[in-house]
Amino acid sequence: MNTPLLQDIQLTLKELNQIILGKEQQVKLALTCLIADGHLLVEDLPGMGKTTLAHALSYVLGLDYKRVQFTSDLLPGDLIGASVFNAQNSEFTFHKGPVFSSLFLADELNRATPKAQSALLEAMEEGQVSVDGQTYALPEPFFVIATQNPQSQYGTFPLPESQLDRFMLRISLGYPDPSVERRILLGQQGRAALGEVKQILSQDNLLKLQRLVPQVKVSETLLDYVQRLIAQTRQSDFCHLGLSPRGAQALMKSSQCWAMLQGRGHVLPEDVQAVFVAVVGHRLVGKKETRGDLLARHILNAVDTIGAGVSA
Image 1 (cartoon, one colour):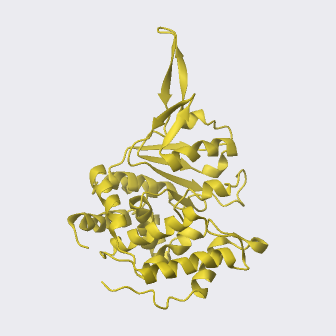
Image 2 (cartoon, rainbow, N blue to C red; image 1 turned 30 degrees about the vertical axis):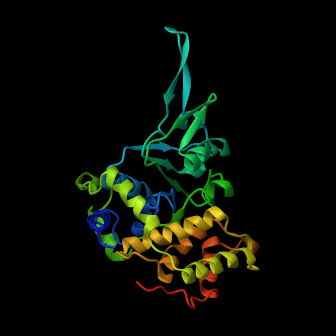
Image 3 (cartoon, rainbow, N blue to C red; image 1 turned 120 degrees about the horizontal axis):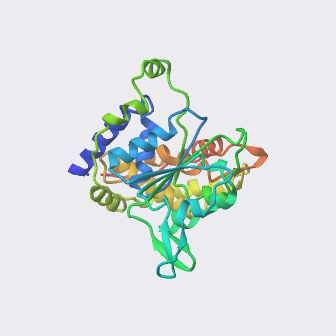
């Protein structure tokens, strides 16, 4: 698979890696999520570059971008909008909220109450919102990038499993390497450099890329491998809750998109392995409070790839 659009992907990754230094894997996962038409959860300590990544993605992809800082007093109407009475014509007029954007950044999502968090559920799943019995379609494409602080941080509300399941991938940027941190200290990275970011893709081209993802071929043996992984999440003695059908679909679509980013028209086991922890880690509920990402790695090691290859 080799098209001008795929060449644009490589240029997009290059542009993003000039802003988010030393995090090539995480940047590629983030772009995979958006091209696969999913929503992205970025979990990390404050000050790690989560918001900067969202800004950079909006600039490079040419997306209409809005950001809301989630707080404990945030209301659903602050996100989706509200109907306001117009005295001149004695009618209610709906005023759209910030969620009506192509890329919506829910900053520190887990600092809002569950009531405010749940306002995003319909938007993320259906691409629409309902207010006073009326349904309003969201822009296409529509992405949610949510950041959250670790639950050990003061003033956080844990996200319910139903909301976590609506995020296709969860990534963590983590601390920078010493050489990268040195460049950061010299001001060679971060929001100050956002003004130099070039737009690479248009919204039309992004939609074209999304339509290419389902065309990436998946062999029967590769599907067998994926189903063995899925079954292991549901049968493992370590897991209390396994992968849902929606999570399984996210794994397949992310693997196809990852393969496409490598310039291939078919999925290999290493494509599945590259996205597995990011797709599965936040969906698994382990026994004895075992972290989901650790469970995901354990499952990857437990399931063999015999016969999962595919010929080009």
